[in-house]
Amino acid sequence: MRILLVNGNRFKQPWPVIPFGLSCVASACESSGHEVKMLDLCFSRHCSSDLEKAIISFSPDIIGISIRNIDNSAGYNTLFLLEETRSEIIIPCKKFFSGPIVIGGPAAGINGAQMLEYFDLSYAVCGDGEDAFIEFLKRIGHGQPLEGMKGLVIRKDQEIIQNPSPMLVENLNHLGFVNPGRYIDLKPYQKFDSPIQIQTKRGCALDCTYCTYNRIEGRKYRLKDPQMIADYIERLFKETGINHIEFTDSTFNIPLGHCKNILKALAEKKLDLNLRTMGLNPGAVDEELVDLMKEAGFRDVDLGAESACDATLAGLGKNFKKDEVIRAGNLLRGKGIPVTWYLLVGAPGETRKSLTETYETINKIASKWDLINIGIGVRVYNGSPLADQMIKSNPSCTTDHFLSPVRYEPKNISLEEIKRITKLESLKNSNYFMYDEDENTPPAVLAMGVFFLRLFAPKQPIWRLHILIRLFQKYTGIACLKRIRFLLSR
Image 1 (cartoon, helix red, strand yellow):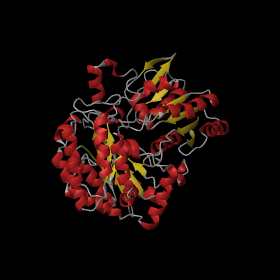
Image 2 (cartoon, one colour; image 1 turned 180 degrees about the vertical axis):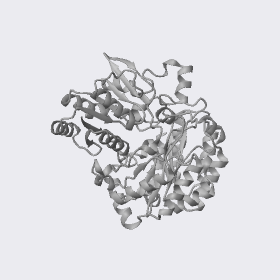
Image 3 (cartoon, rainbow, N blue to C red; image 1 turned 90 degrees about the vertical axis):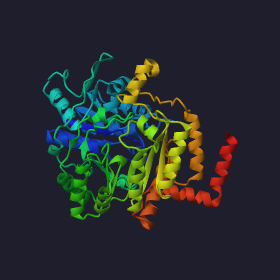
Image 4 (cartoon, rainbow, N blue to C red; image 1 turned 60 degrees about the horizontal axis):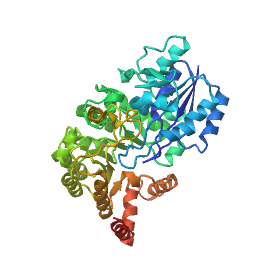
């Protein structure tokens, strides 16, 4: 069959994301004997006409649409993204194509059934697309019933008739090598220094109250062989010329032994890599890990501290405490690895005192050249422990299983007060980044920043441009004027 796969992610913060997961699905389709074309709409100026051209020229039998984000994950000033997806991608797709349309991606793993209703579609794949989408194609191609298939949400006659658990690939080592450059043009992404994203495992056994990784990937860790990962990265680097690699596991350093073995295998290759990771867990950071990260080629990390107050960390369901946050920060700073500190304020148990404790602690241990990325308020997602608690105490808190943005409201401090305190802190500290208002950097400005950074400081992470801009505002008096204006507006 001819399969048209569409990258529907058009959200470009903090940088445009290379559709690596969809490329994996494309590779699996080809391995199963299907003819595949991928349409990347990330940079499209006219999605409707691009869809029309692709559908007419390729004449697909089935269209699969990957949807990465429901929104921007902000609990405060949430940007809902599915409305644009519906108007710019789903509706035109249905206009030009009358065959089966299947949605997938992380968003479908969270709210597959509700998204089918929102888009007025029939099929959503939940779980690992390399197996689930291929099974769907097999059943369609052989005229076999779709009912009873694991990982396939079905909507029929405007009613959800099947919403099963995700289909998961048990042995990730059986998945083949994938070069996304085979399916899409990588040059637009290189203008933004977008990394190629790699998973070293799937699944998560932790119990963070706001997280949906358990729902999307399961609670059991499914580990890839460390040497295979190192070989994979080496081949990707040689074939694409891209050395910027980001590990996108739920937590890169848990299990810790597996993580260290990957770093050792990479270090032995002595490649000129620019490595980074999201979600470094402070509770599993020791000196050996940081040394191995440095040796392997890490130039920056995202540290998922979320808070620096034990009471708030407990409310978030974290497996670490304040002392471990401090230890992790000191180790990374001592080894000279730049850090983006991720804070999530307004969580269960948050108070004015806990908020003050967090900011005072982070200000002491973080470098002034580290970025303090602050999310105000917890965006509640379907399937998270926090969502289950909220429904239990107030069944009317959502009408669509949290597809439409719902935020958690702390009992002892309002989000508006948290916003005010955080804004004042941000006006005093040039390295503070308020996610709900600072994330909207125009793509042209971002691309220009990457260009100049490559010229003058090629080994610096791009997020340091934000700090440089804020320092410029400080020394020219602009920051002072901003603070006065904010205080007068209260």
